[in-house]
Image 1 (cartoon, rainbow, N blue to C red):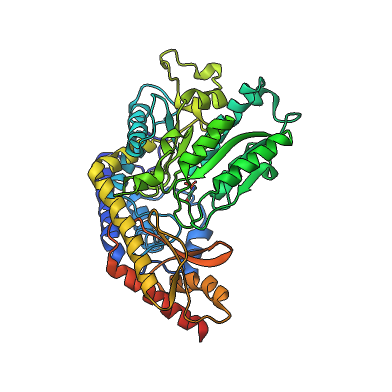
Image 2: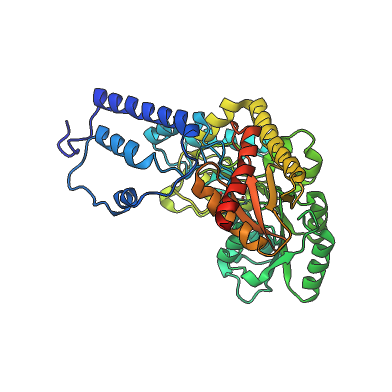
Length: 481
Ligand SMILES: Cc1ncc(COP(=O)(O)O)c(C=O)c1O
């Protein structure tokens, strides 16, 4: 053995044995998820073990580490592997995606670029994702990211640079000062990552306009048109409108075709946040809601949401790959690759230089499901959201708050018409979570406290929906007594 390596790092048989043990732990964990509480608070002793431990002076054997992980890490999940986890937008991991994670780590490439498996496979999965949702794809027209937040930064940076270049200046070279403020348009239902990206890119929060929504929480496009006209009149530079294909609150899909018309009229970059909901286009009868998606300049779509690719994997899809390259390409002498070909390196299309091998888990997940499996998953989960909505409408003590377009049901508990409903609905998610039988989260929709259940798990059943409503009733009772 090489003297410089810690004594605990073994080759051959020891690694094989530890690997087999790791595989058994993973399989055991996944098989048992549904029989355990959805979530439980981490007890103080385990929290201390996790957060306060000291770095060991000498290395520890692999098997011992696996035992520790089994005993102290796996018992404390966030809950999203469980079929009754309905919180935020967090899916269970697809088993194929889980299984190939060690393979990606074993290769451990940087997918910045180059001629190795990672970048080539990334080209395929990006194309698959575009094809799945009907977004026009050109070679190089997208890249995998940590999630939609980073995808959004990439898309908006491309939009910003395109607008500057169209006006005869270079935002990367000059910065933004002294230029008419660039203005972007999103609805109040637009995800916070759109605002963060705009702030990060120096646009200024005050130049992100909030476009009103209609009763179904979709962008009011006539209001958008009026706001753009007003900003032009005021000498500002409208440059981008961001629509949502599946909002985080209610799953609403904006009128994308009408937004595309306004974008075309005014030369705006049309971005679509389809991080969660773009795949909803695959549900039976859903495609008319998405008409216009294919006209977007950019689309954020997260494989780590509806598809269940293990976290984190987002994707930025770009109609014109050159726009992202113009916003990010910076190739120092030590990274020049004469064999890179026309498209260059992935690192030229975004801010990340060293990039993990995200394509392998995405490829494995997509391949394991196949197109028909993806369509079934989307149909199954969208159907659950509609069924819950019907149950809510039928129940005297619940109220539906939004139409179901994707796989989110937004509703509230209304056991009476008196005071206190806002506070009650605000407190319900935490109380449900603490009971451990279901997990849902809340939000505010149209100014009111709202419960929302997001369906992404292939194993969730209609029986689980009844459990959820009963859990809400029981949690509310515990809060009122
Ligand atoms: C609609 C929507 N957009 C964007 C995001 C941000 O995605 P990420 O957390 O992958 O950065 C989310 C996250 O839930 C989302 O639901």
